[in-house]
Structure formats: C-alpha cells, structure tokens
Length: 113
Image (tube, rainbow, N blue to C red; front, top):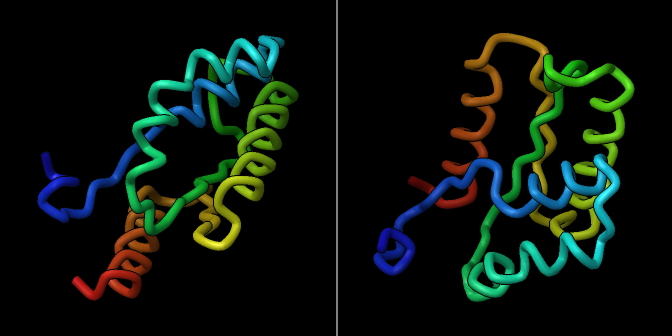
C-alpha cells in the first residue's frame, strides 16, 4: 500500500539474499531463478531509486571467513550487474549509526525529503 501511495519503502534482504546465499551453498542458478521469480516479477514494476550494499569484514558470525568472502563477493557481483548506476556501497565495520546516517543522507539527496 505504501508504494501505491508514493511513499519511500526500504527493503532489507529481498530476493538478493535468497539468490546469493543459495549460490554460496551450491544451489544451481536455474533453481534459484525459479525460486525468486515471483518476487522479481512483482518488483520489475516498482521504481527502485537506490540500492545499498552494506559490507562488513566478517558479515556473519555463523559462517567461516571463507564463506563470508564468497557471500560478499556474490553480493558485489550481483549489485554491479543489477544496480551499478543506482548503487551506494557502505562499509560497516564501525558503529551502526554510520551506515544509517549514510543511507539517510543519500535518501535525502535523492528524494529531497
């Protein structure tokens, strides 16, 4: 409903996560594409103004350093393929307020709100 009213909506972990974590765990691209197809079909009609890729040196405590690198590399590759012109990279090895402030500033500059 908010999209229909022209409001700004921030999504965290949409189909990209399914795709990236699936690839990192050896699921074939064809299967992942089928899994995410409904969400991708819906979002193709949504005007996505900005993408934010938040990177950390050790993104997940549940994974090895090697697996984190695989995941982060897959996110970076996907981001550049899908959203290079609308992409803001954010390094997040500091306080949580730093990336939040960056996102807020980019959104204000993009939408003037």
